[in-house]
Length: 278
Image (cartoon, rainbow, N blue to C red; front, side, top):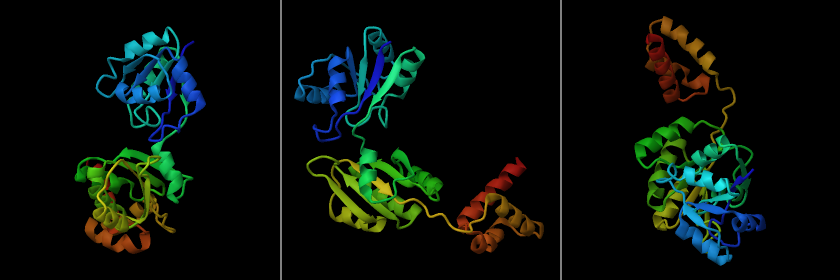
C-alpha cells in the first residue's frame, strides 16, 4: 500500500530538514507542493529531481484525483512553502481523501513556526491553544479575543507585518496587558524575539517598522480562585430576579463575590434569558 507523506520543510534555514525528509522527497513518485517555484529552490539545493505538481488553496479540490492516481504507482510527498504541511496550509481535504481511499498517511515531523516560537517564548508550554492567523478585520479579531480571553492556555497566533500593530492593539484591549513573545523571521538571518508585555510590544513595533513574518505567543488567562460556576451564578442571580431587579442591576451586585467581570455576568445572564424566552 502506498503512503502519503506529510513532509515538514524549513521555515527559513535550509539546513533545518531531516535526513528522512530528504530521502522521502527523493524516493516519492510525486511531490505535491503549495508553490512549485518555492519548493524548486529546496529541491535544487539538495539535488532532488522528483516530479512536482502544485497543490494550493485554489486548486486543492481538482488536484485530489491526480494525487490519488499517483498513489496507485507509489508514495507521494506533500509539502508546504515552509514548515509542516496541512497546518495552516492546504492539506486537510487531501489527507481525508487519501485515508478514505485506503492509503496510509504518515507525518515526517520537522520545522513548525508555532512550536518554535512557543518553546523559545519563556511562557508556559504545558498547555497551549494555536489559532493560526488572527482575523483580518478588527471587529472579527475583537470578537474572537473576547471569546478566548478567560482561557488559561498560552495562546499562539500568526500575523502579517502590515496588521501587527492593529492586532497588538486589539490583544491589549481584549486581554489586558499580558506577557507576550513576538517572534520575527524565525530561523532566518534577521530572526528576532521581543519579550515583554503587550503594551511594550506595541511601543517597540511602533518605533521599529514591522517586517517579515510574525508569530505571537501570549500569556493565558489567570484562573481566578473562588470564581463561581455558571450554575451558582444562575442560582444567585435568580434570587434577585425574583425581587424584580433587572440584568444590569444583578450584574452589578454579583461582580464582587462571583469572581466574574460585570460584562461577563451581563452577557451571560442576557443570553440565558434570551434562550428561556425562545
